Length: 231
Image (cartoon, rainbow, N blue to C red):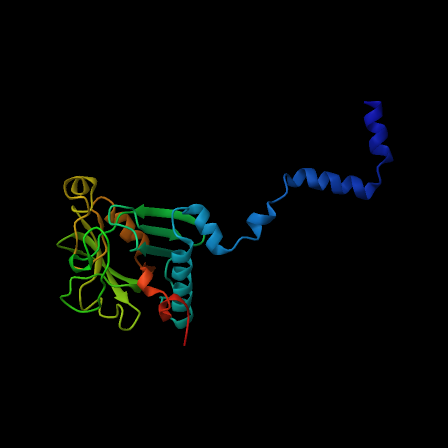
């Protein structure tokens, strides 16, 4: 004990105060974590999400915010669909941008005219029964033939801006299930809507309601103006 008191007595007061402050502060923050980008933090929460796809979605959502395409009170939530993945894989991520954290990681169906297990063809045309790409903004929630559903407004001219006319909505469907995959080797297909599992739909829709952004990506979007804020 005497030796310990001798060390403290010999220590300059400034150094002593600094050592006490450091002890109270606890372990030093990880410099890499504090310097990471929003995309890097989200990828830690959703490691299966392709960084290229996430960055394209973040860029387009940022563009939408700058252009006033998102409601002022829109929730800080971003949904991302990677249509390069097969329908049997979970290819829909719903991300809380503030935390950041992963809210949902689910399977999502594509349109009958878009392909079998793989999505290969996309359209903005009515009656095409094909999925559309680009940025959508969540509209109103309603109860329809598929139960709780969410209208979508497409924000990319020529790619998805006829979504409301085409009744492209998020809804639940029994053909988005393990059982359907076991029977057919793929999910069932919609008429162009991003359909999810029936049991998941109400909570997922609630998370998006109020103007959240949903970005549907495919490699064919490379180089399109939808991947960044242009013009």
